[in-house]
Length: 423
Image (cartoon, rainbow, N blue to C red; front, side, top):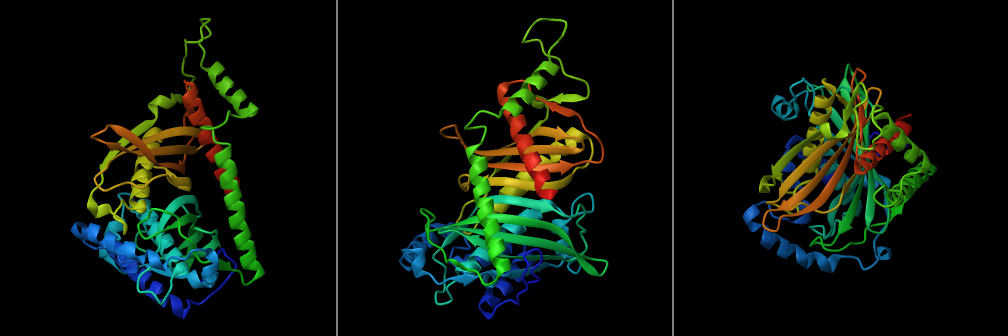
C-alpha cells in the first residue's frame, strides 16, 4: 500500500496476506469476485442452495460480540489493501472494461470499488481464529467519489489502494484511491469514500465491529476527518428539502425562475413560456428497467450494490449525453444512499433526471425503486447524484411546479457541495 492521500506508508501485514491475495484474484476474475467473497462469509456459490447456506450462517451468531469492548482494536494498516487491474497485460479482461469511445466503462470501476470497500472492512474485522466471518458487511452509502483525471486508458494497468479511516460502533468508513500506470508512472484517477455497516449473519440487525487504534498524528487527522464527514451527513439530512423549507435565498431563486417564465402578454399565473436557451425540467429525463436475475446477486443473495451503481451511472450518463448533445465526462459521484436491499426477482425501475445546470456542468439525479408486480407497490431503494461536464455551454434547466423547483434546488445543493470539495 503506497498510502497515497492518507499520509501513511505501510507494508501489507502478514495477517492481511489472505485478503491481499484474495483481492488480486477478485479484480482479475470479474464475476468470480462474488465467489471469493463468499469464501469469507461461508455463503453459497450456487443459487439453488442459498436457503440452506443462509440457515448455516445463522449458527455463526454465537461468535458475535455483545459489545465493542470485547473486540480487539485494529490499526489502519491492518486493513490496508492494494489490488491491481491488469488491463495492459490481459486483453480478455480489457474487453469487459472497454467502452465504445475507447475508454474504460466507469460503471465497472464502481463495481470494483464496492467490492474493494467490502474487503477492506472484512480485513479490519477479520478474526483469524474463525474460518468464516459472522458479520454481514454491506454498503450503507457512497459519501463521495472525486475524479482527478478525465481519461482512463483501456490498455494501461490500474492500481487500487485503500484502508479503514474511521469506525463507529457498527459502521465503518473506507477510503480508496485509484491510479493508472501511463508513460512510466502512476497518476491519480480518483478518490472514493464509502461507508459500510456491519450486520448479524442473517443481515437482520446491527453488529459490533472492532474499534480503531490510532498510531500517529496523521492517523488522528484522518480519523477526525471521518468525524467531520459524519457530522456533515447528519446536517445535510436534517436540512433536506424533503423535511424543511428552502432557505430565504433559495426561495428568492425559485421565485425569480418563476418570474422569468411568465408570459408578459397576459396577467396570469398559469401562462408560462420557456426562456431562450432553456429546457423544461420535465423534458430532461430518461427511464430504464432491470429484471433482477440471480446472476447479479451478492454474497447475501440480494442484488449486488455495485451492479445497482453501474446501472444508475450508465442511465445518468446517457441522460446527460442526450441533454447536452455530446459526450459528458464524470466530475463526481456523491451521496448515494442504500435505503433498502433489492431482492432477487425484483423489477427495478430507474428514473434519471437532469435537475440543475451551470455553465458546462450537468447535475443528474437517478432514483431507483422496486415494483412488486403482485401488490403494485413501489419502494425506493436508492438515490444517486452525478456531476458531469461537457466541453460547451448547455441550456439552462427550468422547473415549472413546486416539486420540480425542490428537485432543482436539491441538484444545486449537490453541485455546490461538489465544487466546494474540489476547489
